[in-house]
Length: 201
Image (cartoon, rainbow, N blue to C red):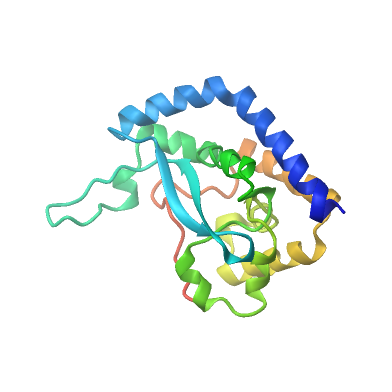
């Protein structure tokens, strides 16, 4: 009953409440990122959701599009803005995804939505992560986040799908809050993105 009905209702209520409470701070961040990025403070990208349905995820844009003389994007560390570093360190770049939760594309808790190009290289067990709505945080994120291998993350994702419950979601939520407070598992300033998944790592 929780998985099929109450989970989405709880997600909607919490997401709406959080957006209202955080709206003054969100407005300040939007303004600062607008000037830091010289334009759009938001980042949109296609991601696979439940049943592999593609949706557009929204995050705060923490890096500029600066390129070298050959038109190639500069390394992450050179494109990460000052406010962007703060937003990433506090995980505030994920907050706009509350909009995705309100739209029903995401849940507060669930496997993180990855890139569409990974879909063909998932094995059958890994594909089970798409049997639920993806989350802003999840079991893998509170058990290592960027410090564990892709295969380990997928093990955690599938375990979550097979053991989904209200109690587990609350456990993940409180663990996430703790990790955000102590900035545990956040990418370093010199590496803003994780290593791409190639089917073996």
